[in-house]
Image (cartoon, rainbow, N blue to C red; front, side, top):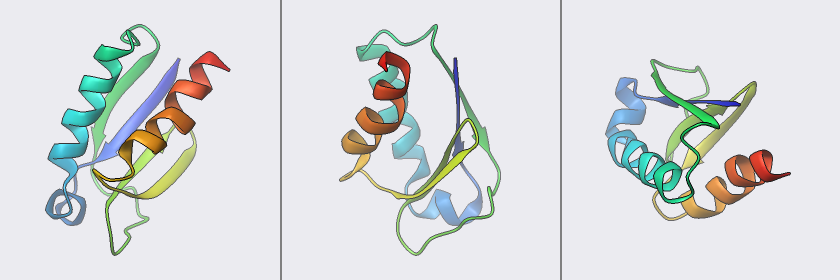
Amino acid sequence: MLIVQICVGSSCHLKGSPEIVELMQKAIQDYGLQNDVVLSGSFCIGKCNRDGVTIQVNDDVHVGITRDNFKEFFIKNILNAIKG
């Protein structure tokens, strides 16, 4: 079970966290991972970046997640972690 927390604090909100949440929900649905991923929002993970949103997967913090790199992030850090 992966715990995925997407920052929805003010900085990440302005950088697109609502869209990243939607992309994550859709990807979880599309890959049938509803029983493998716990998705939640989090206020400031403390690793703000100039670009993109911060996402914590279990204990690993990833910064700079955008619409453009979301698919790569999802495959590497969510899908591969579950399937691996």
